[in-house]
Image 1 (cartoon, rainbow, N blue to C red):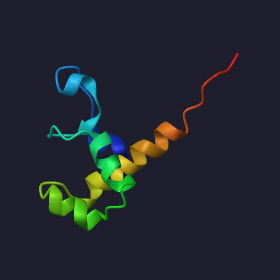
Image 2 (cartoon, helix red, strand yellow; image 1 turned 30 degrees about the vertical axis):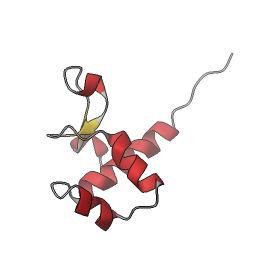
Image 3 (spheres, one colour; image 1 turned 45 degrees about the vertical axis):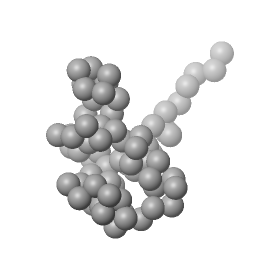
Length: 73
């Protein structure tokens, strides 16, 4: 899974927040649904234009962010 195929960020849409390509649905919204215990099926019911790959990309995006290393001085 390469989340870059499904997620984009441009300054003119949602003030640059990462979102699912071709939509105005921010990744943070989808991650919030997962954090609340919703299943993929339930999220797709709420957002019928989304698919499993897009939802998986949101999780992969979050995984990449969690691996970010900050240099502490």
